[in-house]
Image (cartoon, rainbow, N blue to C red; front, top):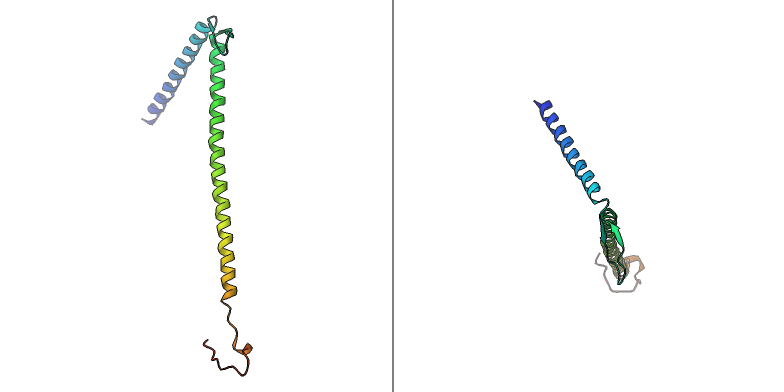
Length: 123
């Protein structure tokens, strides 16, 4: 039973591939000799084949997609860098505050007190 499903799966892929290949062949044959007027600037309207225009549009679309994705990645990296530097700065400030607090909280040991003092050590 599983081999039948495997055959169905394989033949489905073969049929889909054949239909797409046939469509592409017909697309190229029908649009090879057709020309269109393409405007890209004032008084600049060259005649191009449809295939050239489609290929150019595809390449420009891919480039635009890559550039937009790169822009979003760069913005995300800048945010991460700002957060990381902010976190490091706050950690340094906390460490400095702890060091200052430790210096202020040091107690004098009983042996260092003068002999004539009336104070009784609590610890």
